[in-house]
Length: 100
Image 1 (cartoon, rainbow, N blue to C red):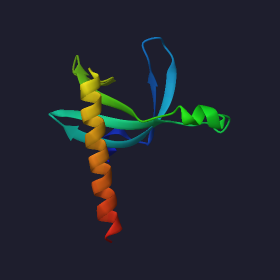
Image 2 (tube, rainbow, N blue to C red):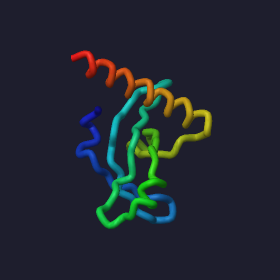
Image 3 (tube, helix red, strand yellow):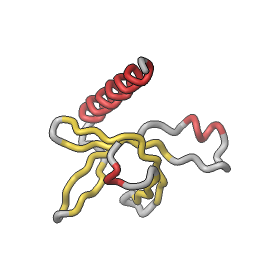
Image 4 (cartoon, one colour):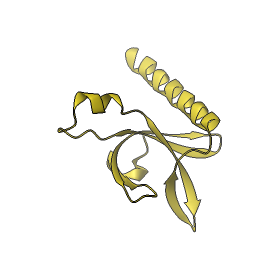
Protein backbone atom coordinates (compact mmCIF):
# COMPACT_ATOMS: atom_id res chain seq x y z
CA UNK A 1 0.00 0.00 0.00
CA UNK A 2 1.27 3.44 -0.83
CA UNK A 3 2.36 5.47 2.16
CA UNK A 4 2.07 8.59 0.00
CA UNK A 5 -1.52 9.07 1.16
CA UNK A 6 -0.64 8.95 4.87
CA UNK A 7 -2.92 7.45 7.50
CA UNK A 8 -5.50 4.82 6.67
CA UNK A 9 -8.42 7.24 7.03
CA UNK A 10 -9.24 10.27 4.90
CA UNK A 11 -12.14 12.68 4.71
CA UNK A 12 -13.56 13.50 1.27
CA UNK A 13 -16.14 16.10 0.32
CA UNK A 14 -18.60 15.47 -2.50
CA UNK A 15 -19.89 18.12 -4.92
CA UNK A 16 -22.83 18.80 -2.56
CA UNK A 17 -20.49 19.64 0.33
CA UNK A 18 -21.17 16.41 2.26
CA UNK A 19 -18.14 15.00 4.07
CA UNK A 20 -17.39 11.28 4.29
CA UNK A 21 -14.67 9.45 6.15
CA UNK A 22 -13.10 6.58 4.23
CA UNK A 23 -10.64 3.86 5.17
CA UNK A 24 -7.89 3.43 2.55
CA UNK A 25 -7.40 -0.24 1.71
CA UNK A 26 -5.00 -0.34 -1.20
CA UNK A 27 -3.55 1.54 -4.17
CA UNK A 28 -2.83 0.09 -7.60
CA UNK A 29 -1.46 1.28 -10.93
CA UNK A 30 -3.68 0.08 -13.77
CA UNK A 31 -3.83 1.09 -17.43
CA UNK A 32 -1.61 4.11 -16.79
CA UNK A 33 -3.68 5.51 -13.90
CA UNK A 34 -3.54 5.31 -10.12
CA UNK A 35 -6.59 3.92 -8.33
CA UNK A 36 -7.39 3.74 -4.64
CA UNK A 37 -9.82 1.40 -2.91
CA UNK A 38 -11.71 2.49 0.19
CA UNK A 39 -14.37 1.26 2.58
CA UNK A 40 -16.60 3.83 4.26
CA UNK A 41 -15.51 4.28 7.86
CA UNK A 42 -18.14 2.76 10.15
CA UNK A 43 -18.97 4.62 13.31
CA UNK A 44 -19.93 2.75 16.46
CA UNK A 45 -23.46 4.22 16.41
CA UNK A 46 -24.36 2.86 12.94
CA UNK A 47 -26.74 -0.07 13.03
CA UNK A 48 -26.22 -3.40 11.25
CA UNK A 49 -28.63 -2.53 8.43
CA UNK A 50 -26.60 0.57 7.53
CA UNK A 51 -23.40 -1.51 7.54
CA UNK A 52 -24.87 -3.92 4.96
CA UNK A 53 -25.20 -1.03 2.48
CA UNK A 54 -21.50 -0.16 2.72
CA UNK A 55 -19.35 -1.37 -0.13
CA UNK A 56 -16.02 -0.90 -1.79
CA UNK A 57 -15.43 2.61 -3.13
CA UNK A 58 -12.99 3.02 -6.01
CA UNK A 59 -11.45 6.39 -6.80
CA UNK A 60 -8.98 7.56 -9.42
CA UNK A 61 -6.12 10.02 -8.92
CA UNK A 62 -6.41 12.90 -11.39
CA UNK A 63 -4.28 16.00 -11.79
CA UNK A 64 -5.93 19.40 -11.99
CA UNK A 65 -3.84 22.58 -12.04
CA UNK A 66 -0.84 20.54 -10.88
CA UNK A 67 -2.71 19.23 -7.83
CA UNK A 68 -3.59 15.58 -7.10
CA UNK A 69 -7.32 15.05 -6.63
CA UNK A 70 -9.49 11.99 -6.13
CA UNK A 71 -12.25 11.46 -8.67
CA UNK A 72 -14.99 8.96 -9.33
CA UNK A 73 -14.45 6.59 -12.23
CA UNK A 74 -15.62 7.60 -15.69
CA UNK A 75 -17.75 4.58 -16.61
CA UNK A 76 -19.22 1.33 -15.39
CA UNK A 77 -16.76 -0.51 -17.63
CA UNK A 78 -13.79 1.27 -16.03
CA UNK A 79 -15.20 0.57 -12.57
CA UNK A 80 -15.61 -3.14 -13.33
CA UNK A 81 -12.10 -3.45 -14.80
CA UNK A 82 -10.52 -1.69 -11.81
CA UNK A 83 -12.61 -3.75 -9.36
CA UNK A 84 -11.48 -6.95 -11.09
CA UNK A 85 -7.84 -5.82 -10.89
CA UNK A 86 -8.16 -5.04 -7.15
CA UNK A 87 -9.69 -8.48 -6.55
CA UNK A 88 -6.93 -10.15 -8.57
CA UNK A 89 -4.29 -8.29 -6.54
CA UNK A 90 -6.05 -9.13 -3.27
CA UNK A 91 -6.20 -12.85 -4.03
CA UNK A 92 -2.57 -12.89 -5.20
CA UNK A 93 -1.57 -11.32 -1.86
CA UNK A 94 -3.63 -13.89 0.09
CA UNK A 95 -2.04 -16.78 -1.83
CA UNK A 96 1.45 -15.41 -1.10
CA UNK A 97 0.63 -14.97 2.61
CA UNK A 98 -0.92 -18.45 2.82
CA UNK A 99 2.29 -20.11 1.68
CA UNK A 100 4.41 -18.56 4.43
